[in-house]
Length: 352
Image 1 (tube, one colour):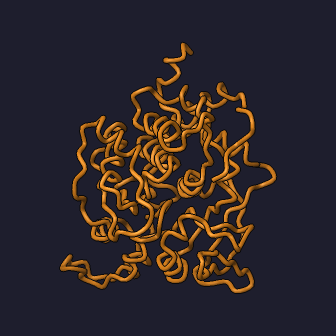
Image 2 (cartoon, one colour; image 1 turned 90 degrees about the vertical axis):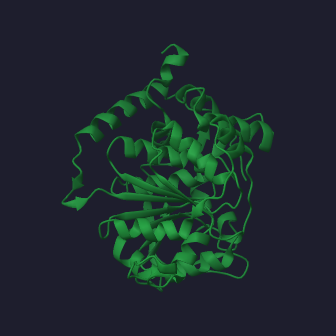
């Protein structure tokens, strides 16, 4: 994965001001927007394979705490026994223990767990058998208002592909809809980190780790799909020195970040592309104009995991790739994301 060679931008004061504005604006928001129900975020992640998933989860916690979304479920596509406890460690720190967590419904794909094990053990959370992700997806989707759910997938499409294949009353759950009908009724859109719109021959990690699942989801998902491709996140960085200032020392996300760079990458430069965070940003703020769109169109997955976009063959519902806007280049998106990570009080540890 590519690393940044750019210097860290000096915008800490602006970031802290934007955090305050974010919180104040969120506090004024009603529980509905334009007579629509509060958006519901379901987060499906391969937490443990890379650190960007953890920062994407932080964004969901911040939005939930501000009352901007409901956040009932996280599901794991990483089969490591430490993936779910790692997710739960972050939930516990952000005081959102009530969020349900589902374990991977199939053992497929890379299953690293160094930093998830580290933060789980520090939170005294043992590795244990987790509840089935697909059963929880069906349950939680069924409980939501029609058209209110935004699914964010930042790992393999394993759980979502299995969900689409479930029949009504799956394993006796008494839910009268198939998985595909549940998605059609409850889900507004799917936001994915996958593929690459600039290099159709490129086999991006999330796709190639479970090609049949990605192919199925992109072909059969019955609501719009928005994809943040490799080329988006690879130009937007999380900055280690900024995170150290804006996350408290005992925050498991900061502990995970340090562990990932020290023990996994063994890299002295603690900057990392923001692949997953850009997908989460789209789901949290699709109307803010952060990105342009390529599409509508069709996205097919090739034999090796290529993502082949055809704009002249639009599917219904459509598929889109995110694109940078001239007015919001990667550096500006980086600033927006950094404002989402910082936790209240973190500036106190630097004397600010």
